[in-house]
Image (cartoon, rainbow, N blue to C red; front, top):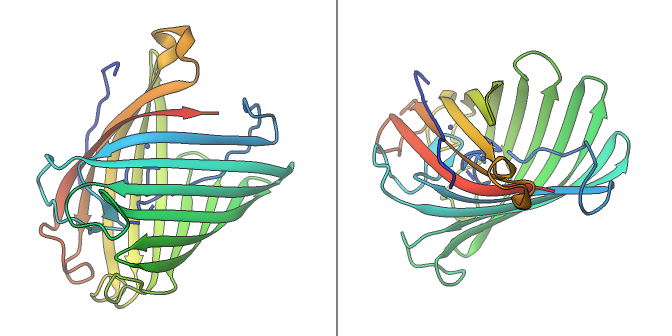
Length: 274
């Protein structure tokens, strides 16, 4: 479940909006996106990604869920898995899950598992435009919050995207329903074996989405890095180390419950594309 003035991030160690934004699976914002290039170790019709991440914050579309504020010391474990089944050259079926594991509250799921998100959807390739429609169930607090996302991605400089995130039922959120629209851009570059990405997101929400007014909700700017572990040892195959920082600016009239209106988040993890 779950994103500007300035942000910086760097991963230089051997060592990805969800309820996060698929913003960055993402850094906890974490948005899932379809994989359509084939070549999977499971066969050309099935591909996917697995990520085992630690995050300093759980950010759900600008809302600081655990109230970490400007503190980077709280380690949240957020594993995620997404599978893409290529139905035709331009149509894919998507399944995924994201978990929030920590000891910040007594879990009614079991152990330290605070939330389990699951999603299913379809992706369409329409020339330079990719359209993804995802239905999600966010399971936490003994209830399920239902979500419908429509994600548009354009094959163009700075990878522009638009996410329409629709909260259909409030679940255990205490009243969060409505729509948030997230306009995203990303610039990528390489420095030796390390791949860098600079994501920028700007979002507006309808009245009551996070218990506040309508209007500008938040903006975020990050710097993320990914190091293929095959550069260290070919036996590590497609595994990678990834991490980064993201800086958020939120509007307290639209998102009134954040302890700080602006804050820095961090994440670090290991993952594999297959």
